[in-house]
Amino acid sequence: MSGVDGQRPELTSRLTGAELARWYWLKSELIGFARLLGVTGSGSKDELTAQLTAVLDGTPAPPRSHRAPARLGVQLCGDLGLDTLIPPGQRSSQELRAWFVTNLGRSLRFDRRMREFINAADGTTTLGDALRHWTSTRNEPVTHIDPQ
Image (tube, rainbow, N blue to C red; front, side, top):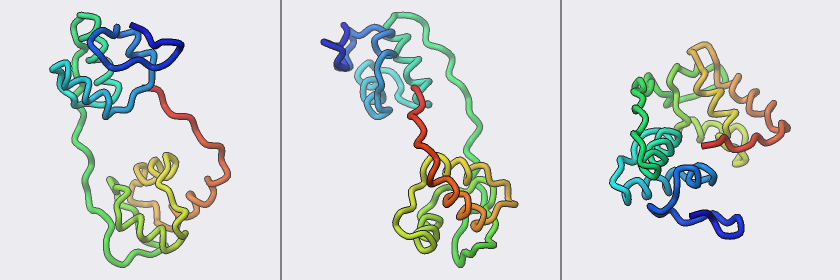
């Protein structure tokens, strides 16, 4: 059952795997659809889409990947400054956001470039480096949304 006049169809068990893959879906939509079909809604968006595609097509589901647990090391808090080192595993936390807002104003957005910069921190990068990175990437073109 394809979308009428190129419109995205409803998520129903009558869809084919190809039709599901043809359209962009929010992960929350895929999770709800998985529950409707009696499939686990966990995993990445790609894994969930592959699982649902297999169910719709009546084929075996691909094996689920086993990811390493998230790196949850020491997180920044307290008095932060330009020379504060960003520890490995630092999240884009409320404390970090508050520090950036104080230094940049409310225009701060933890966009993809900034999240990748923070995630790549190895303990030698400072908040000053992050501030310069944010400022230097403001005029770059907006990147497209990654595919499912």
